[in-house]
Length: 173
Image (cartoon, rainbow, N blue to C red):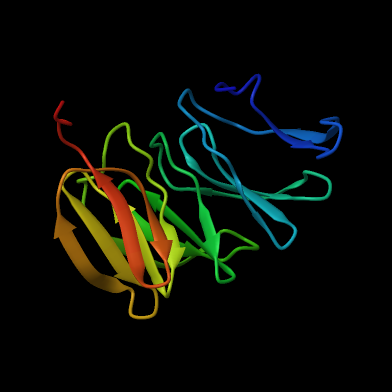
Protein backbone atom coordinates (compact mmCIF):
# COMPACT_ATOMS: atom_id res chain seq x y z
CA UNK A 1 0.00 0.00 0.00
CA UNK A 2 1.17 3.52 -0.47
CA UNK A 3 0.01 5.92 2.18
CA UNK A 4 0.76 6.41 5.86
CA UNK A 5 -2.59 5.12 7.10
CA UNK A 6 -2.45 1.74 5.37
CA UNK A 7 1.17 0.79 4.63
CA UNK A 8 2.16 -2.53 6.18
CA UNK A 9 5.16 -4.82 5.90
CA UNK A 10 4.01 -8.45 6.03
CA UNK A 11 5.78 -11.65 7.02
CA UNK A 12 3.90 -14.67 5.67
CA UNK A 13 4.31 -18.32 6.57
CA UNK A 14 5.81 -20.08 3.55
CA UNK A 15 3.67 -23.25 3.59
CA UNK A 16 0.18 -21.86 4.31
CA UNK A 17 0.52 -18.16 3.48
CA UNK A 18 -0.79 -17.25 6.92
CA UNK A 19 0.30 -13.95 8.46
CA UNK A 20 3.17 -14.35 10.94
CA UNK A 21 3.28 -10.60 11.64
CA UNK A 22 2.59 -7.27 10.00
CA UNK A 23 4.14 -3.94 10.86
CA UNK A 24 3.00 -0.46 9.85
CA UNK A 25 5.47 1.92 8.29
CA UNK A 26 5.31 5.51 7.07
CA UNK A 27 5.16 5.86 3.30
CA UNK A 28 4.43 8.15 0.41
CA UNK A 29 2.65 7.17 -2.78
CA UNK A 30 4.94 5.31 -5.12
CA UNK A 31 5.91 1.85 -6.24
CA UNK A 32 7.55 -0.31 -3.60
CA UNK A 33 9.76 -3.27 -4.40
CA UNK A 34 10.61 -6.46 -2.52
CA UNK A 35 12.59 -6.05 0.69
CA UNK A 36 16.11 -7.28 1.31
CA UNK A 37 16.25 -9.92 4.06
CA UNK A 38 19.27 -11.40 5.86
CA UNK A 39 20.78 -11.96 9.29
CA UNK A 40 17.53 -11.39 11.19
CA UNK A 41 16.67 -8.08 9.51
CA UNK A 42 14.26 -6.93 6.79
CA UNK A 43 15.21 -3.68 4.99
CA UNK A 44 12.74 -1.63 2.94
CA UNK A 45 12.26 1.72 1.27
CA UNK A 46 9.90 3.69 3.48
CA UNK A 47 9.25 6.92 5.28
CA UNK A 48 6.90 9.78 4.50
CA UNK A 49 9.68 11.67 2.71
CA UNK A 50 11.78 8.64 1.78
CA UNK A 51 14.40 6.58 3.48
CA UNK A 52 15.67 3.21 4.62
CA UNK A 53 13.88 1.22 7.32
CA UNK A 54 15.08 -1.90 9.11
CA UNK A 55 12.77 -4.38 10.89
CA UNK A 56 13.49 -7.51 12.92
CA UNK A 57 12.61 -10.53 10.78
CA UNK A 58 11.24 -12.58 13.70
CA UNK A 59 8.68 -10.11 15.13
CA UNK A 60 8.56 -7.17 12.69
CA UNK A 61 9.74 -4.60 15.22
CA UNK A 62 11.18 -1.52 13.54
CA UNK A 63 14.87 -1.20 14.42
CA UNK A 64 15.67 2.07 12.63
CA UNK A 65 14.74 4.62 10.00
CA UNK A 66 17.33 6.62 8.06
CA UNK A 67 16.01 9.51 5.94
CA UNK A 68 17.47 9.50 2.40
CA UNK A 69 14.99 11.66 0.50
CA UNK A 70 12.04 10.46 -1.56
CA UNK A 71 12.56 8.72 -4.85
CA UNK A 72 10.32 5.94 -6.20
CA UNK A 73 11.30 2.48 -7.47
CA UNK A 74 14.26 1.43 -5.37
CA UNK A 75 14.99 -1.18 -2.77
CA UNK A 76 18.09 -1.83 -0.69
CA UNK A 77 20.57 -4.53 -1.65
CA UNK A 78 22.33 -6.82 0.81
CA UNK A 79 25.34 -8.89 -0.22
CA UNK A 80 28.62 -10.00 1.30
CA UNK A 81 27.23 -8.93 4.73
CA UNK A 82 26.94 -5.34 3.52
CA UNK A 83 23.86 -3.14 2.96
CA UNK A 84 23.60 -0.70 0.02
CA UNK A 85 21.18 1.86 -1.40
CA UNK A 86 21.08 3.98 -4.56
CA UNK A 87 18.81 6.98 -3.97
CA UNK A 88 18.84 10.35 -5.74
CA UNK A 89 22.16 9.60 -7.42
CA UNK A 90 23.96 8.74 -4.18
CA UNK A 91 25.26 5.19 -3.81
CA UNK A 92 25.69 4.43 -0.12
CA UNK A 93 26.82 1.65 2.14
CA UNK A 94 24.90 1.52 5.43
CA UNK A 95 25.50 -0.12 8.76
CA UNK A 96 23.03 -3.05 8.52
CA UNK A 97 21.99 -2.86 12.18
CA UNK A 98 21.43 0.91 12.51
CA UNK A 99 21.18 2.28 8.96
CA UNK A 100 23.94 4.85 9.45
CA UNK A 101 25.83 5.73 6.27
CA UNK A 102 29.35 4.26 6.21
CA UNK A 103 30.32 5.94 2.92
CA UNK A 104 28.63 7.59 -0.03
CA UNK A 105 29.52 8.20 -3.69
CA UNK A 106 27.67 10.79 -5.81
CA UNK A 107 26.93 9.21 -9.20
CA UNK A 108 24.88 12.08 -10.63
CA UNK A 109 21.24 12.36 -11.60
CA UNK A 110 21.23 10.25 -14.80
CA UNK A 111 19.02 7.64 -13.13
CA UNK A 112 15.91 6.37 -14.93
CA UNK A 113 12.83 8.19 -13.63
CA UNK A 114 10.61 5.13 -13.71
CA UNK A 115 13.28 2.44 -13.72
CA UNK A 116 14.39 0.32 -10.82
CA UNK A 117 17.25 1.85 -8.89
CA UNK A 118 18.62 -1.18 -7.13
CA UNK A 119 22.31 -2.03 -7.05
CA UNK A 120 23.23 -5.53 -8.15
CA UNK A 121 26.18 -6.75 -6.07
CA UNK A 122 28.84 -9.35 -6.86
CA UNK A 123 32.56 -9.92 -7.29
CA UNK A 124 33.34 -6.87 -5.15
CA UNK A 125 31.37 -4.52 -7.40
CA UNK A 126 27.95 -2.87 -7.48
CA UNK A 127 26.44 -2.48 -10.95
CA UNK A 128 23.57 -0.11 -11.86
CA UNK A 129 21.61 0.87 -14.92
CA UNK A 130 21.38 4.60 -15.63
CA UNK A 131 19.51 6.34 -18.48
CA UNK A 132 22.49 6.42 -20.82
CA UNK A 133 25.02 4.08 -19.27
CA UNK A 134 25.82 1.06 -17.13
CA UNK A 135 28.08 1.80 -14.15
CA UNK A 136 30.13 -0.42 -11.85
CA UNK A 137 31.47 0.79 -8.50
CA UNK A 138 34.39 -0.95 -6.80
CA UNK A 139 33.23 -1.70 -3.26
CA UNK A 140 36.73 -1.59 -1.81
CA UNK A 141 37.96 1.70 -3.29
CA UNK A 142 34.47 3.33 -3.30
CA UNK A 143 35.13 4.64 -6.81
CA UNK A 144 33.62 4.06 -10.25
CA UNK A 145 35.42 1.02 -11.71
CA UNK A 146 33.97 1.38 -15.21
CA UNK A 147 31.11 2.89 -17.19
CA UNK A 148 29.66 1.77 -20.56
CA UNK A 149 27.43 4.01 -22.70
CA UNK A 150 24.12 2.57 -23.92
CA UNK A 151 20.33 2.66 -23.60
CA UNK A 152 20.11 -0.21 -21.13
CA UNK A 153 16.88 -1.53 -19.61
CA UNK A 154 16.11 -3.41 -16.42
CA UNK A 155 18.46 -4.76 -13.82
CA UNK A 156 21.83 -6.19 -14.77
CA UNK A 157 22.67 -9.79 -13.86
CA UNK A 158 26.10 -10.90 -12.67
CA UNK A 159 27.72 -14.29 -13.13
CA UNK A 160 31.21 -14.38 -11.68
CA UNK A 161 32.93 -11.44 -13.39
CA UNK A 162 30.47 -11.21 -16.33
CA UNK A 163 27.61 -8.68 -16.53
CA UNK A 164 24.44 -9.26 -18.57
CA UNK A 165 21.84 -6.56 -19.40
CA UNK A 166 19.34 -5.74 -22.13
CA UNK A 167 19.70 -2.68 -24.35
CA UNK A 168 16.67 -0.85 -25.72
CA UNK A 169 15.91 -0.62 -29.40
CA UNK A 170 13.48 -1.80 -32.01
CA UNK A 171 13.28 -5.47 -32.73
CA UNK A 172 13.15 -6.15 -36.47
CA UNK A 173 10.38 -8.29 -37.90
